[in-house]
Length: 419
Image (cartoon, rainbow, N blue to C red; front, side, top):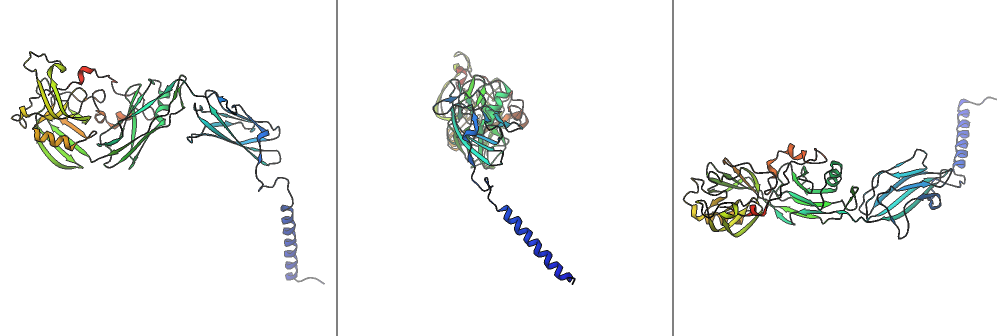
């Protein structure tokens, strides 16, 4: 008797369930290497060329990990030091050997994690540790300024213990120097010369920003002769945006805080032959009392321009002796004529107010003077006188890395003030 279509359907489903049951039984059968099993210890299956125990590896030699299992292979290798820096490497297509392609750091401790697979597909794991030897030729980095609160124009400085001229080596150094700010800003390093770098944002630092500066150069190979040394990090805080703009043609200084004018002061600036430099300067420091003598800036004592004066409330803006200071002897000319030897003079009361208002890193600009332009480097912080395009050209990572400063060492005789 023939079965109805419905009966045939039920029988087919029964056979399908039976087949699935058989398949499930097969998948669940015992397996010598189930996928859920813990990886086996692959110590006897791999070899690597770094010493164990108290031995130190040569950081100038590549790290190699190879398989000792003729039928197995290496599937992955990671090598990381205690600072979290990972070593780049390349695994051969057959999985027989892994070799580092980036230099090891000197004086570092590494953890190497190796994953393997045998001919049956079972996974193996092994973790190895080793240390690298230290280098006797270290490149040290000193950050500046010292920790504290600064104005929005303060550059970060990095001084190296040895010159670095090769662009590729400069890129290694620059990549390891980190500047993080809250809020975040766009900025970059600029090579002033082979031993000095400055960092500044594209625009001035935001008011109330926090800036952290650190180096990850420790142990890193810079050149064949130099390895990076650990460096002390730096933390700065940024105060209000204080800007003082002196109009030498109008004989006045306008001071603003966070964009709002807070004072306008009558001043005198440099007379012909001693004209004050134009451009953006940054407050370098403050001295309550300075003795200013013409002889220290090349003016002979018998000259009509000779002077020897006690000066109070002196705010320095260049290393060569340009200040904003009290000049009670020129009050009659302040606001109407330029009679100084290059400094910006004002009454004692106004100089005291200015002295108490500004801090290191605040901005002091001069416009409409007959003087030369402020140098970007070598005589204070003239960094802001470079356009952002030119500033970036001094980076080894985003520009040509050659720097655009003179790298001039300021002669001690030029550090004397003039009034």
